[in-house]
Length: 112
Length: 113
Image (cartoon, rainbow over all chains, first blue to last red):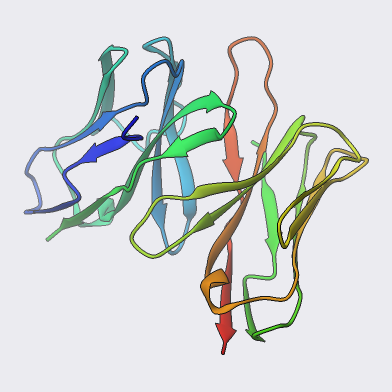
């Protein structure tokens, strides 16, 4: 398996624009997590899904953020409208298996 | 919500030295995980602990699940330059469909050759 695949790796956008981050989890994993990483706040859980159903979205900062998982092999995290304070690295992770939870390589988002 | 306190925040050591870092929680977990993150990559699992009191080794790494279920430590023996990175503890209290994973703020390790 190619692991958890995130796209794009880097995204630079202007304030006010819509941003969509994508994730393909490892096949067979029941759980998918979206995390945001910043220097100040570390790794924050935004939302996670079990069998494509959102279980806990209490970490989503505000209504500008939304996440979907239309099927077992794809999830999106959307920010609309984006703001400079949204700049961070966004990780997707899936699991569990004998390796625990596997993270993707992340999307580095810069909002200018 | 659950909070993890990870210490130290950073460490600067000489190659060959041993390293120790730990995490404490305000509430109990039934799984502790230790991850390492290299620059530009996502965290990678190093060691998983599933039982209170469990002591597990993976090469030069040793980790323990505290008896109280509220703490864990990670030791790295005979450090080498490639040990450089950010180390995260993570705790999980799973029940039903709840698999929420909470991370510490990380320990940045620098190894001087």
